[in-house]
Amino acid sequence: MSTKILGLRTVGYKVSDLTAAKKWYTEAFETEPYFDEPFYVGFNIAGYELGLMPDEAVNGDNVITYWGVENIESEYYRMLDLGAAEHEAPHGVGGDIAVASVKDPWGNIIGLIYNPHFKL
Image 1 (cartoon, rainbow, N blue to C red):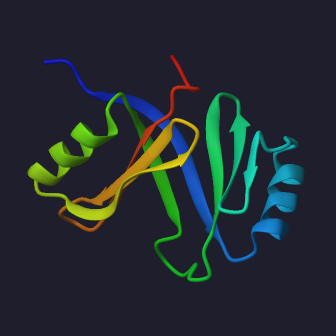
Image 2: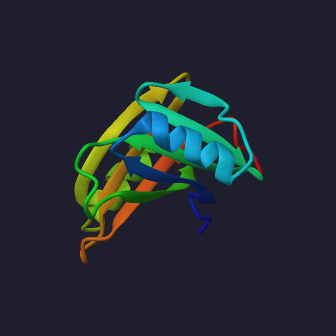
């Protein structure tokens, strides 16, 4: 049986001030964002994505790690069939990139991402 999970791709941080966070992360990682929109700022850090997402409620639930998949819909529903709970249904986030997330039976968030710009 071959795995459908392709490996770690993205870690996303929810921030209350996207502009200030973008400035801080640009300086901290000495890297300009490659994707810069009001809903998401993405940095390519040595081949891995560091993403900033605006969210006023940054207590708890503010970090999400995304695992690469080839088919976001099928992997999302496969996880639900295994007993995970819906956290965020699959949806596009710009271009041909799509994300989704589930909560495992213990409440941990598992992010899934289809991003054809990150190939092994």
